Image (cartoon, rainbow, N blue to C red; front, top):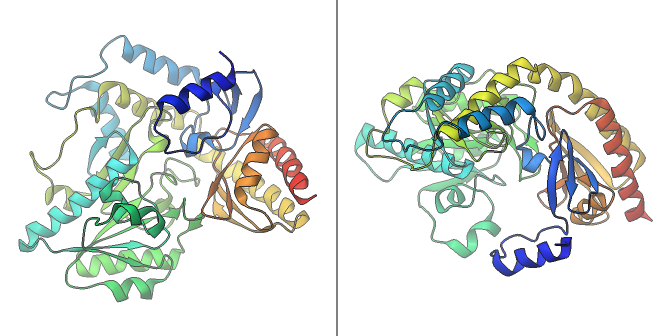
Length: 400
């Protein structure tokens, strides 16, 4: 079949909730993708920050192949070996206490919300508690996750959402304090806002929020779904801030391609929230997904992924800054590690994403005017150089 025939088939049978780009990717190798016509693309999107190890890592593939030959699914009515091993590694690396594996980041957020409400309920028996979330945040598209997503555009058609959610301004501690009442049970935020435009939390802000939570016994929920798993140079972005969440959500690169997420609890929260019957999932934490998670942690250590990110990120930042100096359409760069954003003016950022794709470069947008670069964590300097060449070609054509 031709590329157009595959796209036509997808449009015929898939619900049209995405405006997809006109490309059909067939395979990947390292940091490159290849479409059905054999064209090569340098990937600086990583499946929206998922493929941290790049495509077709032989050790990762072998771990999944080995598990496929054993058992894929048993349900959570029984124990399985990969889940126990993956949980031990995730808990150990985060310094937290317990983990619940989900199928996605959105489901991890749903679980975190339930943890917060149950924790507060056990304290006073009330069901009218409030959660403070951030404006311009993004936590997912299910009704619960959407309720704490600070973007009315996403929310409006699906109201009423869950109640008791108030919004404050990210990196504005006073706006958070202004929303706190005796009913506040949790504050949820992304350590680095992703969809909202690549905004890292200011250290003073995040430490201030944590202090506020400790003083008032409010749960601090940190969403590390996109910024976690090494993307900022720490395994979890909050580890560079000297803070500790009560609940953390992770997904995306946690499984490096296999759909898996998790919410992770500290000891206090784990001992005073969900109990049997409160929460569950049929597929979550199944042997195949957890074999992927377990191997990801092993490979991060064997390949020194965190150190590599710390070494390559300054080079990426330098090259992006140099590009910004040459082109007036780039008005700012912001981000941490290999989670970078370029603020674009003069033409819609979507046009730049499309033009870059024509040049064989996969990038994505964030917010209304930010070009987002979240490549596989295994990129080298030569890949950064190649990206700059292709991106500049796209910019020049749009500036002409």
